[in-house]
Amino acid sequence: MPLLNERFIQNIVILTGAGISAESGVATFRDADGLWEKHNPMEIATPEAFARDPELVYRFYNARRRQLPAVQPNAAHRELARLQREFHGDVFLVTQNVDDLHERGGSDQVCHMHGELNSMLCGGCGERMPAEADYNGDSPCPGCNARGELRPDVVWFGEMPYHMDEIEARLADCDLFIAVGTSGVVYPAAGFVQQALLQGALTVEINKEVSEVTGLFHLQRQGVATAEVTTLVKELLAG
Ligand code: OAD
Image (cartoon, rainbow, N blue to C red; front, side, top):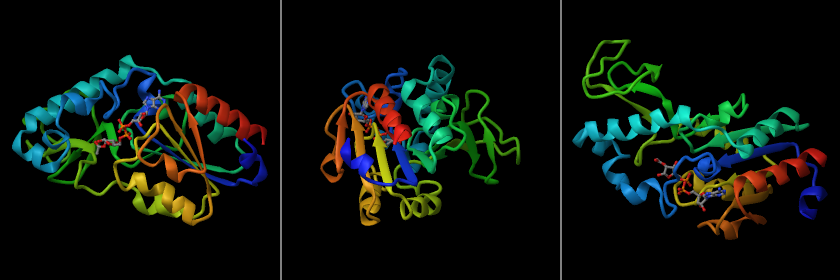
């Protein structure tokens, strides 16, 4: 990849999406067998859906949380963690994923812009807590004891993703932006490539298919994340 070697790279921002966890056995959203094939996102992943049918929403997230111990991080998670440890510059990892596979793959810094399955949030007192079990509309908040106020600590459609100030600051300062396994249809994450381009950053996409935003990247590496991330990390560490 000549373009990579031609540049001195100091600050990297990596955005990951559901595709990076696909080879671990976690369903993506928009692939043929994806979660949004089986469920209507507007009936699951909006504040209105939660108000209308909280038990349906609890069941969806309980099931996904219960799956976590049964899946393992793959080579793509582990290689990104290695890049974070061994790269001479800074590597900021931001994920749209709510699973914990980056952390279990060895990453010490993971910015979960869409929240985490392993966290619950009380709409009453605002406290966040580790998710420890299945939840339902009767589950009390350990902080304020209110019932019916706990919700999955995830960002739903119509809500503002977490940590946007920090993400924008990192994008404003990056020389290399890498997107892995994301379809490029959900904003603001889908717009990060444009923000990075405005800063003059080199942009690389890894995806097994052409995404909505492939044409915006300088380089596209088409293939599965385990193979393509491993190759890219090797090149970056060698450079
Ligand atoms: P999507 O399901 O929309 O897209 C997954 C992408 O990963 C697709 O472009 C696939 O081609 C690609 N892919 C699948 N398997 C792959 C593999 N083994 N290697 C490389 N690429 C692979 O998932 P996201 O883009 O993450 O938000 O979805 C973004 C957001 O939409 C999610 O965070 C979620 C969803 O609705 C909310 O719930 C708010």
